[in-house]
Amino acid sequence: MSELEIAMGMIIDVFARYAGTDGNAQSLSKGELKVLMEKELPGFLESGRDKETVDKLLKDLDANGDATVDFNEFIVFVAALTSACHKYFQQGGAK
Amino acid sequence: MSELEIAMGMIIDVFARYAGTDGNAQSLSKGELKVLMEKELPGFLESGRDKETVDKLLKDLDANGDATVDFNEFIVFVAALTSACHKYFQQGGAK
Image (tube, rainbow over all chains, first blue to last red; front, side, top):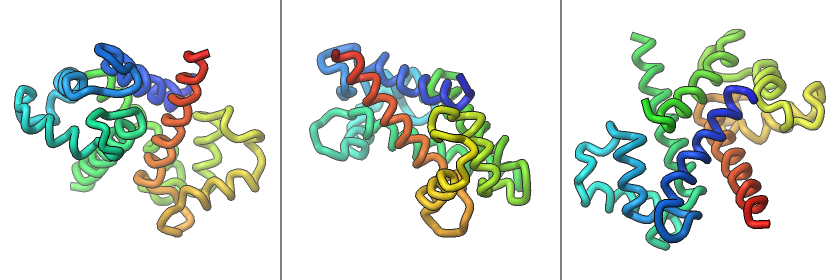
C-alpha cells in the first residue's frame, strides 16, 4: 500500500475504533467524540474535560442534526484540520 | 503522536513530496498530479497513462480554475475518496 492509502486507512480505523464503543458503530456519540478528541487530538480542545467545548464541536460537526457524528461529518472535520495544519506549516516554513 | 495526527501528517507529506517536483511547491501541476495518482493511488485511474483521465481529474479537482491542484483542493479529494472507501468497507462488512 502507498503512503496515501495507509493514511486513509488509518483515518477509517480511528473512526471505527471510537465509534464502535457504544451503541451505533456507524457514528460517534457525544461521549465517543469526547474520548476520540482527548486521545487523538489532545491539543485541539483547550481542556479535554470541558463539556461545553465538546458540545459545541458536536453541534458544529453534526451537519445532519442527528446529535451524532457519522463518518462523512468526521472526514470533513479531519480535512479542515489537516488543511489548517498544512497552512500553519507553510507559514512557518516561509519565515 | 496519535494515529490520527500521524495520518494527517502523512497526507501533508505526500502532497508536499509530489507538489515540490517542479515549479510551484504549493500546488500540483498536471504532471505532478499524474505521478501522484500513479504512485499513490494506482487503482484509481483505470490506466495511469491515460492523459484524458488525468485531464478530467485535474478539471474536477481544480475548484479555483488555476489549472493546478492546491492543498485545499487535494484534501477535499482525499476526504471524498476516504469516505467512498469507508462506505465500501461498511457494505462489505454488512454482507
